[in-house]
Image (cartoon, rainbow, N blue to C red; front, side, top):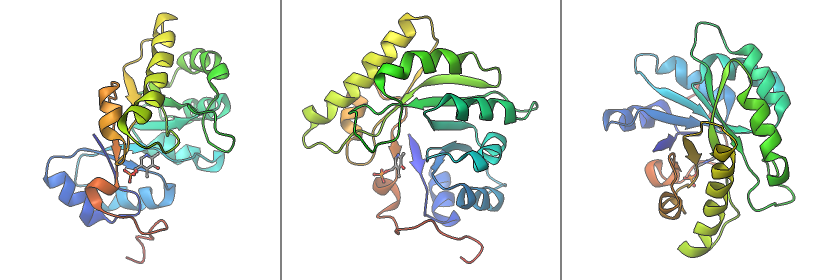
Length: 206
Ligand SMILES: *Cc1c(COP(=O)(O)O)cnc(C)c1O
């Protein structure tokens, strides 16, 4: 389980850590960096799950262990170039626009194979698998359909020879469906920490 701590303060992270949680997900770069420096005494695996702007990619490459939200070769190439030599290759997932929604982030299914093969060849990244944020659906069967699609795409990539071990899918409202379809990371915020404040927090002021 990935505990999504975006917009929550360091005390919330410390409480979850004390309960045994070690992997935390963040969506806002500055908030995450502030949190990391205030939590240096804990050993935490940090996952970046938000949209990635090119001017922020260097710190993401330097400070995070995983990035779940890659949807372009350009971003992947940049992260690979910027990943420090003294760190393990950055674990990454490709975000797939699984419902082909017009305004949604993620690579289209038709472009996934080419992107996956290109990203897998980058020296400082380790392509682990796929991630999705499906359109909201009611009922576990409807929720499972999108996750089953992502799993099938993953199987096709594995059949092409890619060594993938990760399906990042499922959030507070659909994590049971995602687990039934083979999720390896459910990304859970609200169900752990409660309802989020609307905007990223400024830890410098907190
Ligand atoms: C915020 C967020 C989550 C967590 O969502 P909840 O519904 O609060 O569990 C998961 N994944 C991504 C990409 C997010 O941005």
